[in-house]
Image (cartoon, rainbow, N blue to C red; front, top):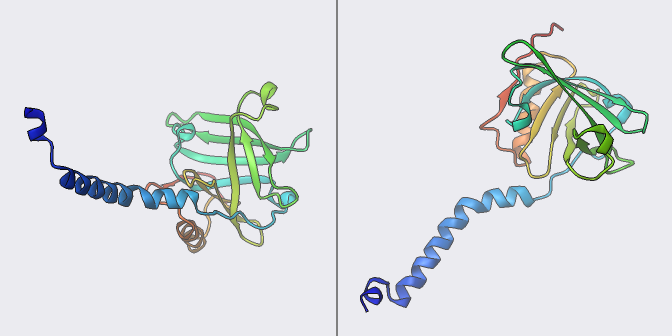
Length: 196
């Protein structure tokens, strides 16, 4: 009988559940909304213009780039299968170059702005596992700067053909990322030692 004296009456218990529900939803609803709201890739990407060398200007933190301290680049070429070969490089804290080779599969032909990227061993890349979303969200008309992300807004990269791009343009692209729901509080600005 002692237990029943400690528990609140049913009216108080209902109020407690309602208050808990309101508090819980206020913490998690914005995140759920942002993750589930539609994120648009660019309407069409001219793949031939997009290929080549890109310098990472900024990114959201991610485990597979945790050892990259500077000089992050991505080089895209077409491979023998007609997919995009990905050659990512960076320099670690000891000055050693790190390299990661992958393959990107276009997932919205003929628009070419959404890819599924895999870095699993080449012999098993044909399997549709271990592929991450890579969407081109914004690109300038001369293909000199690109904003890349994925629909859950966990990952984001700002890429440029120039290792030291104009700050006004960087700001423009990062503001766009914010307007489509990316939280940039943890954004990492990438150090580039390459000369223009």
